[in-house]
Length: 339
Ligand SMILES: Nc1ncnc2c1ncn2[C@@H]1O[C@H](COP(=O)(O)OP(=O)(O)O)[C@@H](O)[C@H]1O
Ligand SMILES: [Mg+2]
Image (tube, rainbow, N blue to C red; front, side):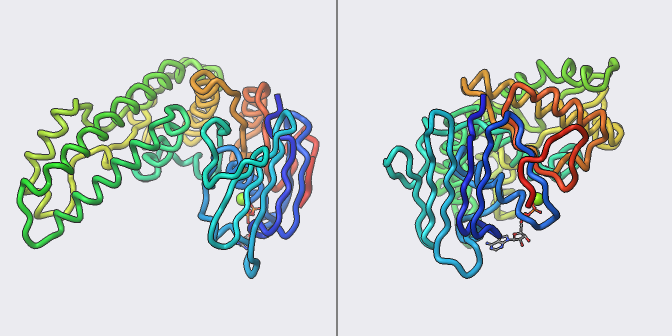
């Protein structure tokens, strides 16, 4: 069941030299704030997803050093080596080198960060980013289409900022925004449906009551041609604003608790249980859609949860490999690494 067997780092953030064995299903890393716990998870995430969840390579490179290297050993003795020389990064697997982590080598990851606890009441852009990252993992092409959408949107916005711009100048960008945008809406709605199918049942299992919850898409669910019409109809307004007022870059997600907006009506504990539910569902959906068991990275969230929720967390993920960081030792857990 263990995907990740070991981690070795050189000049990675604050770590000059670091190594860790992950031979047990649950690995617990203990350390004070600033001791480099999140950085270890960042390296694992980088090896499994091909990208950091925190920063770019120049930020990761240890201060005053010329290169970093991360070596992550996986099951079947496979090794992913990542090198960065200050300019270029490369991945090496079985002596094959590439600038990006090949798709077939990517593993799904459920990452749980302290900030996620506040997802219900955070900013729309934080929620958008959150679900975009999840949907990139679920749908192979989501990230590609999102990248193309953002590029087309930038071009459209650049044109809108010009002194003189005519409706026709935007035509090809409108077409692209509508094409990619409508596709993103489809994926988002479909993925939310999958999450919502399970949400209430998983929540009830944690809370042990009869409450219900779901996540709603806050955006217009339009077809490609309706999308295009909207963009064209908004031309005058967008020109005055200097940016694109309609589109998936503005859409949001709303947590609903007992048929009311959770933000403002659900309690702290209820919000936390909803986020826990979402995390469990992520693991289930990723496993089903991707066909690989996700690795669960829990970054310093035990201090945010009461004992009941800590127990649920460990229990619900017991069939997955977990790598956990914490400042204190959670009850009944054995420490694998102390920083
Ligand atoms: N490129 C870098 N070089 C050296 N130190 C860094 C670099 N990036 C971050 N740090 C430092 O690494 C420390 C550990 O970060 P982090 O992994 O977030 O620790 P933890 O999760 O244990 O609180 C922080 O004090 C941070 O300032
Ligand atoms: Mg941390």
